[in-house]
Image 1 (cartoon, helix red, strand yellow):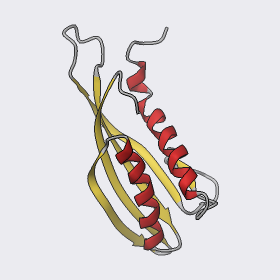
Image 2 (image 1 turned 90 degrees about the horizontal axis):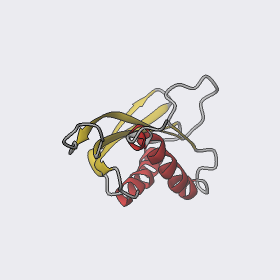
Image 3 (image 1 turned 90 degrees about the vertical axis):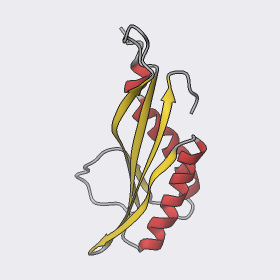
Image 4 (image 1 turned 30 degrees about the vertical axis):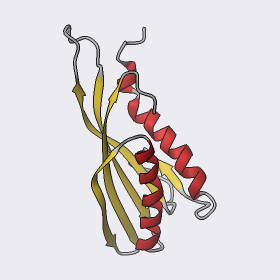
Length: 137
């Protein structure tokens, strides 16, 4: 039996699929080997650039009187872009990914922060939005 709250439990996958498709279409021409994932660890060889999106703990918002149905969720997603070609490529990829989140009315709560270790460059940002059970992304 599917729960009335199933939409909230599947929110991360839905958002990931939308962003992966939309951003992937724009990025494939310049970065044909781009890897967009929601899996934290991969045992295979690293692929660059990599876009890793994952859901941070969310908050239930606007509960019903009975406390049975999840009416809305405050969703926070962290985006990490890792590349081996330079900080400017990480920045370009992040800009395209963030634009897709902005189109879905997410607010950027942590602007891209850059770091580099050895041969890799990382850009990290966070986005947040309250999503209702009947919202269309």
